[in-house]
Amino acid sequence: MKITIIQDIIHWADKQANLNKTQKQLETLAEKTDLVVLPEMFTTGFCTDRPDLAEDMQGNTAKTLKRWAADFGFAIAGSFIATENGNLYNRGFFVYPNGEVVTADKRHLFSMGSEDEFFTAGNKKLTVSYMGFNIRLLICYDVRFPVWSRNANNEYDLLIYVANFPQSRISSWDILTPARAVENQTYVCAVNCIGTDGNNIQYNGHSAIFDYKGNKIAVAPDNETSIITTEISKESLFNNYFKSRGGKGKIVIAKLISSPENIKIQEEEISGYKWIKKEEIEKYLTLQNQIESARKIFEEFKDYF
Image (cartoon, rainbow, N blue to C red; front, side, top):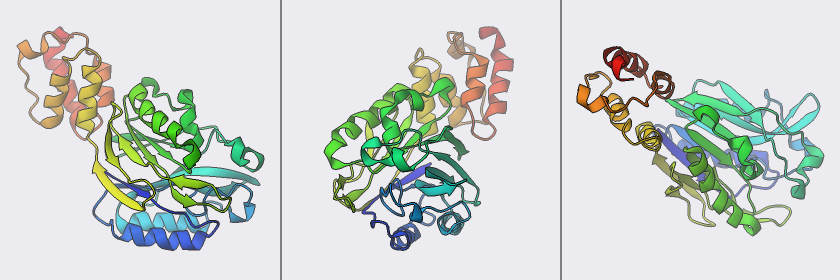
């Protein structure tokens, strides 16, 4: 799956200017990527005391996101200021190319920015399935709370953080984002903004995509508007997962993923892999036709498990 991160200045409290700018950027990506990730509050900047900027899910921002996803043929993730039942939310969103929208609200509100004075904290996690990946989206300050991002039972393969993370604390961002990748054995996509906001807070970016070992596989230059695309591999993630649990099971998985129609495996290759459980194989093989292939393998070699 190809992921694109957009690191840019956010025009303070100017929704239309930000929508216009973002549309021009997305137009250049049509048919070139599968998922675009925008910063936190991409239409306004970190305006915590401006309830007049909030929109419901029938508002212009939500409608525009749906239109973009459909017109350009990729999914879009980020957050904006939302209102629902009289409350304000820092609302994370994932918009599919077919127009379906899944949302969840920021859990940990940033008191130093008075976010907790105006916004209501979310109480659910956003996890979606897209192009064979399970994806979780969290927002900015959520990165400081590892329990909230814990990949229990390997529920996701890609963890996205969208942020307005200040330059004054960027060292924490640089430490925590790869740490989340390592501890959860997952890809992490971390998107921040740049520039100076209406409260004179400075942002310098440090947006990046990390692999499951915490290595940077895509990096946006500091303090520069950047649109960067990279590709992540489910096969590579599978291989790492099983290697970390013994090292031998990766051969079975790699063969299956590389050639799902060719499921014949020599008995001497598989006889030493009794630690692999059937439910584990079926849980992590989510690509088309591979669940059935896994079942056939276990039917043929069930005596070895």
